[in-house]
Length: 323
Image (tube, rainbow, N blue to C red; front, side, top):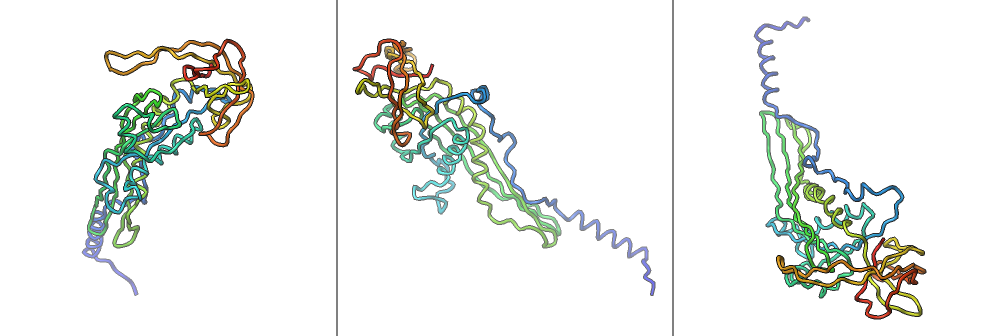
């Protein structure tokens, strides 16, 4: 039996095909896309270092980020009522740890830190680190966008975050770096005539949006953390040796040498009202003879005098620094 197509049936078939094509929304493979420019840029200080060069790790305390947004105040909370803040601090810690330049310490008492920072007296917190990073998630939001055709439907989930970071020199209590960054991420899925992917709630977008925002700041954070030479302190003089803070986990090795400085005068800056320590004066050189301690917070090094005259008392008036 032969099948014949009439002109009218061909026109009807063509018309139906055009309707199907025009009634379909664009459907792409489900994906998550961070905002352009979210890639972490290498710090100039780190990039300039020669391969194999020895460096000393800074101790950095990362405080729990506060969540200043209304998002995440319901069931999206942890025992500290701030899951979004925890995500931000965890992401920043992971990115800093990946550089292998820092010893990271966690601080969860964000309220106490903010209170003491306002009073200008971080010494009350007894933070065993060189620098303190505090931050907040100032903006965070999600939304769903639908693109609906006659026979298709595309659902896009979007997340956007804005993060603020402050870097504090614990020794002086001064904020040496402050900046904000923003990022976003989205995922989409769609169906045509009921066939295709259906988009459920994508919780990973939270991390990706916050991560994109933090990525824009990481290079500057690292640059400021490594800007000043590594410094430590004279703790005591016992049995013919000087005891300094720091050990193997910070990169100190036997036979390393450090300059010993007498502290400069502390003067008040009339413009800012802040106390400023003037540059110190080199009085001698110490050489490391042995290392002790089990973790970064308790490690010490025993040193002998390599040159110069170093007092055995009033050691709080002196500090050591890498050459």
